[in-house]
Image (cartoon, rainbow, N blue to C red):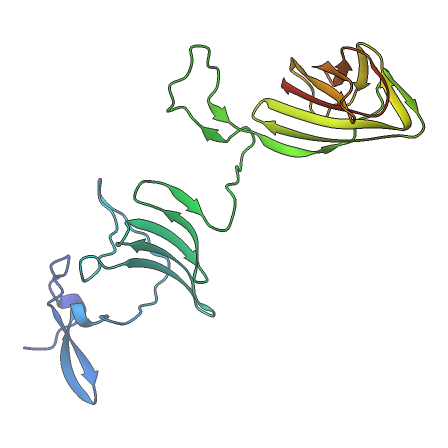
Length: 253
């Protein structure tokens, strides 16, 4: 057969079957190799790959033996294997692995296990939706979009009578719209609170719906209910002079 330019050849049938052959020089001899064997067992470097698939199509990683584990590897040219996505056939789980450590696992039931990090909400007011649950008739939201906890320093409310130096401490937690705030106000000699007097006026989170709670003293010989309104906590009955007054309120923002 006479030599021809590539431009003179007829077009090949595509897609290729893999059985087509090419001439190569190996060990000083010209031999033939099939298209399927050109890259068999060898890593092939490529640039960015864009795959276009038809409707309901996709890209498959096929193992040579049924039941084998499959990997999608990400390799750093300098440092070697950087991470991989692993499908474990033994338990039908999908794992995300970096530096030989499993970070995240999705099991066959759809459960997600995060071994190292936290679930971080990237947008304010987003969170975990429980919308698949059947709600009560008055439901207005099934989105849990807030959690917070911390400390605060209650100030000296106008209802207190303090003898000696004033000090205080407090803690709070917010879960969704529910806030639990607690604290203690102390007088170096004594502290007392008038009936309906404000123990403190600087709640860390402003009250939306009036809340209530309890007031006690260290020796448990006095107690009262209390009310949370705006940023104040009011002691509903008088607490006579004592070393410290403890309180806890629960309210809705």
